[in-house]
Length: 318
Image (cartoon, rainbow, N blue to C red; front, side):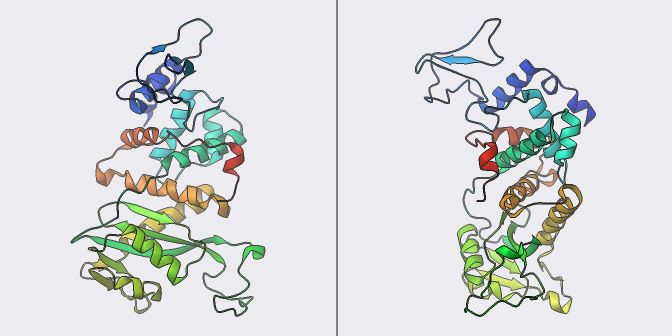
């Protein structure tokens, strides 16, 4: 890791711009204002900021930071790249305090850097998981307490919710789908009711797939829509039967919870979806799929475009 961080783009601003430009614009500069690729020239001059171009189609200046998570940031680009490498290469995440100490920026800036990077890690779901002969494991877990004022007061049937329901009823629901040997997609549904879970499963998994779940009733009805629905009975201490198991998705949850409890320690509900995107990104760009730390950072850089995030919108509930 130390030899990687010694590379020029982590310490020199001009080198940082060149490194990012090569990955965001592999075929040359593209104007973020008009989309033009012709008649674009570098701007020169002693007072010109690094990496500036001018588009002579719309006559507007720009650099590679415009219309990305970097836009309007006063943090030097080479420090952004240091933070990106740290977050991309740390299996259980990097806290805002660690970014604050490493970059020497304020804690507020470090917190915002972390959330912008998580925004860049969000994947645009393309096509369903699984397919003919493939296995997709599905499971739900619960993390973090829901504040009492936000807890549901009535069940779906209209009955009052018990004040001491026990189990996961006062925790936030998380649903994850993982293609065995492939990618994972995680969701934070408002509720973990059968209809909500079934819609996510239908929308994200190919019908030709073999669906593997535990014995939960949440999957009984939707499971009939797939080529096979095979279960393990955790309540009977059954965790694998032949190749039927949910151990892959359980390991995904394990890394997520270790990172959230050990590294981040606290996460409000309005930010949970971004933390899920962060852990999904690292899983989907893991060593087992042939992606090393440097390539993972490069993939993160390619995800910065069109994901502008301001401090105000970062604090809004989604």
